[in-house]
Image (cartoon, rainbow, N blue to C red; front, side, top):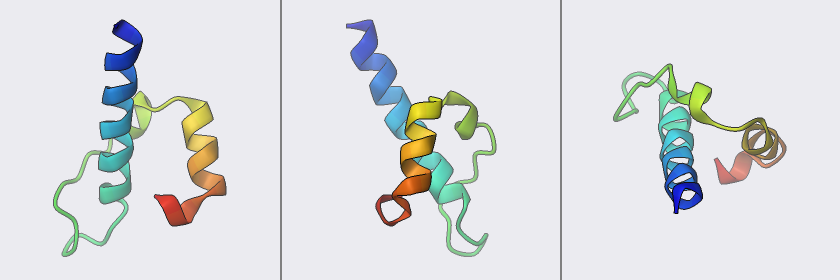
Length: 53
């Protein structure tokens, strides 16, 4: 159960990180800490697959 909650939280952190990269006038939130809650594995995947993020 803990693993599922962790993955859910990580998914939300990815969304917040992605949103934070947008220009200020386009984003709905800014969370400079979100990246710190994302595993290196997911960050590597996001870097290799930018069209998905």
